[in-house]
Amino acid sequence: MCIAAITVATPVLAETRTDVTVASPWEIASYDPTVSGSIVMALEIMETLVDADEAGTLRPGLATDWTVSDDGLTWEFTLRDGVSFHDGSAFDAQAAVFALTRAWEQPGILQKSPINGIFEQDGKVVITLETPFTALPSLLTHSTTIIPAPAAFDDKGSPSALIGTGPFKVTKFMPPQSVAMARFDDYWGEKAKLETATYLAASRAETRALLAESGDADLVFTFDASGYSHLQHVDTITTTAVPIPRAVLMKVNASHPFFEDVRAREALSLATPRAGIAKSITRFPESAATQLFPPALSDWHSADLEPLATDIDAASALLAELGWKPGDDGILTRDGERFEIQLRTFPDRPELPLIATALQDTWRTIGIDLEVSVASYSEIPKGHQDGSLEVGLFARNYGLTPDPIGPVTEDFGAEGGDWGAMGWTNLPVAEAIQIVASTDDPQARAAGIATVTQALHRELPVIPVVWYEHTVSVANGLEGVIIDPLQRSYGLSEMFWAE
Image (tube, rainbow, N blue to C red; front, side):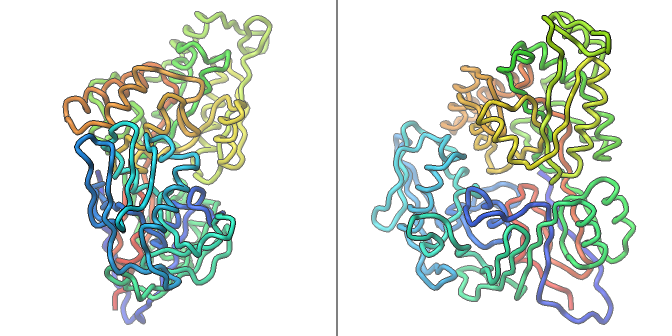
């Protein structure tokens, strides 16, 4: 996994600063960890029981160590002593149990695990399971499992404030656009070098590029291709691109009459111009996806899979096998029904609408009339839940937990998931996922992963388009910056301005 350490020039005679401004596309729309937990964790406001470094190696967080019983059904987490929340209250097992239980009860990564109880015992957090699940510590690094203070909830148990244990505390929160923070001087670990930090959510790529170029933001994430190219010539900043375990993919409703036959999904894949998209839109030609999991996920990326290809003639032939025939206007028809479908995407990642347009143009050449809907990212999980989604285009990070089995379980388990399979079930895959999640045996784990990757490659409940490059700009003079390929942290507590 690639980790980028940024070295930048030091401005001459510059006054030493103690603040930093970060900008990214992602709004902080809620106090709720299940909604905005990824940004809250990345800003080091709240922490998890288990942490992970930039290489994905697990390490102590709010728990100093953890053990599992011989039968694999009971996990005990020993908590760190002397930890305070930002409001001065003490962190303890009761606070952790409340937060984790709430996360377990919400749709998400813990709900997909075989947990049957979370409780406090002798000052420890104890989690009991229905079946062995060796991936549990990895799941407890996920952003939805951050631990807020009891005071962060109102009298009905709903999140009402951003109060955690991290090296930065919130001084002003203006959802969904910004949050101001100050160093938490009573932090249990090494204190942050910066005194204050500000986070700005800027959904438009043009706005983020302007923030980087003008110096109004010091650390800026995610540019469109033209903005990234332009910023490489701005001498006040350093730009970089880091391969990360994220893929741009299409989620296909496999229960839709048009897509229930795997040949239809294969046709969509064959009519996806990956090389052209990677060269002309994302501008990283090597990022054209040959399979779902990027090379950064070495255990899940397989050299044995035949690379996904683009073949318009083969796509047309498969649709003809399924009874589709061109109408007078060139759009395919079958039994009096036109091949008209809607693709939903969102503008937060600037390349997505452009990719959607490329798909619209290419698919029309094989007779598919594709309507592109660009709206809130929430329209994709909403469409999954109410059954209205036909095709969704988005970017999925399989490094949300250091062991990808977390998001894989969430996406491709028996019931699928908001960002994974829809209308598609595969019992051998569900069983293999359970094996991978419950064993430490390397051979059993490798066999299970192979079953999963081969089935996803063959049956295409999601269709990979390109792998992701994480684009970043850093103001000259800002040092100690490490770009986390797992995107767990912005690393604010490590940063400082050169004197």
